[in-house]
Image (cartoon, rainbow, N blue to C red; front, side, top):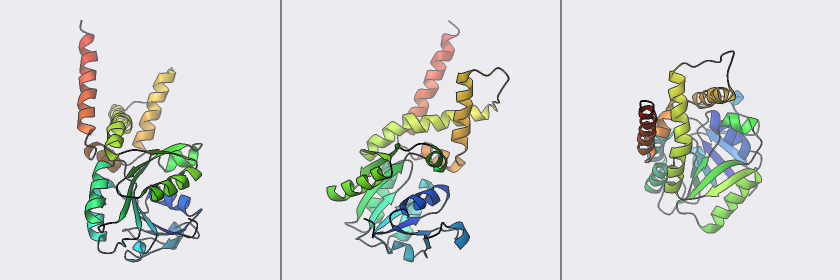
Length: 245
């Protein structure tokens, strides 16, 4: 796979880290709608034009889900059928559906969720999880890319988009939701913090270090997010009512 040309559409904080990871093994080119200066891009990575980014063996869309459908609509007439297409959104049902709808008929599509951000990837020992959802790739392509991700010391989990969103609504989604709620309380360290309180403050720091847009996307574009929030508020109400008995 070392001779492949791999493109990254989107060069925010995660797109930059992802491009750097891929550049260890591939010829990588990147594009950002905001424009890029050479000093912003790691050495050896090519800055491509919006039309030139699609001339590649594999393309990773590293854009927010709130803008992803529009990017796909705009991209569809540039895309090559022989390219393997990936998204990296934090939810999977909608991106998988959109890629199948807007990319050229017969395209090879794999929906992915690298379940880490720039901070955790750079600061944590590897074996961070990465989910792959096969939209319409053959088994050989799935295995080839799964082996590649594993070679980067990532924990690859293959599942359906529906299963991913069900699981993350009650793991990632609820964590970000609770983190934002706690942040709204304006909590601060004290002189007598318990270990549990310190860990709660860590949740606030971790979740609120991500963008507000990511928080909105995790909540609004996960089909199971509303049910998770309803269940959480019902549980809070039950506990609260138990105090009056």
